[in-house]
Length: 188
Image (cartoon, rainbow, N blue to C red; front, top):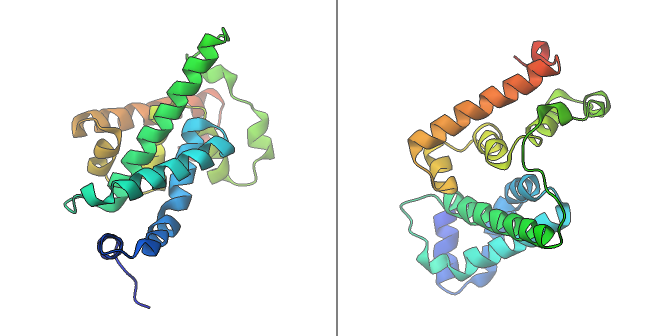
């Protein structure tokens, strides 16, 4: 069987071959799950949000404009779903009068993470997870998932200039974090 493009799969689904949608699920489930896990910090919530995202994409597949890549369109759905669930959980916690400190304190990093992590990439991803959500996501989308700045701006629904600024600032925060904990020699 030849390797089908996303657009060929979408055309097949639109012609009534709904089972072909599973090819898109297989293609994007891991990256979508990893993105949601970073937003929600909980695997069960990430799994549920991923199912919601795939369902939203399936239900709106006819509105997909083929000028953009399916991956960009789908990441935007995943990102918005993750943020909605995150905001909902935050509101629920606030209603229960639980104090949530949203400020970022780089002094709160668990130093045992470094000692227990077997490879540098895994450690670096653990540190990235400690960044504020938008900063972590822009780094993950750019360096791990390989999205272009233009694609990231569409996913995050911000201008290209703001995307560049966010990536730059995220790099600075990550660098400062690594320097503060004396890990800069290994990564910088």
